[in-house]
Image 1 (spheres, rainbow, N blue to C red):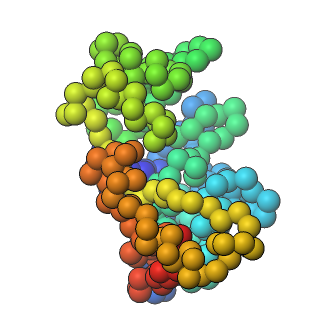
Image 2: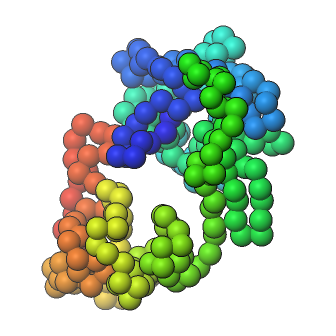
Length: 261
């Protein structure tokens, strides 16, 4: 799966899918695709990669969120099934995350672009040939404006480069880099914020002392001006009193405990 420009789920390597057995079985049909080296993408390869990412000891950051998956099996050379122990409504969103990108050693990935030049801090990408297009002959040559150069650098330099119109897009960084956007006088129309839930907070380091008492924690929680704190980082952000969003993968909202801070 992958996200479109509006952050919505759309087909990626899976051209279509169905959900059966009350949400405990996802069956994906893979589109005709090839690795960077030209070899065909097979369902067995996809299953092996997903199993490796979910195996015990996996360093994939999404592994803790995919514990509902019971097994992943190959049904045909182009069809795989993901079987769940319990329904997971946001499974497609998880599969669209970059942490679950399919990458085969020596053969690259399956995306729409291919690496044609590797520099010390940059990559030159060029559109890949898509065998599913109705006009395959038109894809044999590409135009220079179709190339994409990715540059990895410090936020300050990337923002200055964008402000000087030497780059088309800047992504990444942290909330600590936001002041740089204002200092570089980037036009507000050129700033986009992902509709993602984040978390800023105070961590309780010890179980004893003043914060060990729930009433003391509730008093501090009530004294924090959340609007002022969030506005100090970014104007317009909405504060929340729950660590989890209103709904995650459950039919009921998460519990609220006023004594937490």
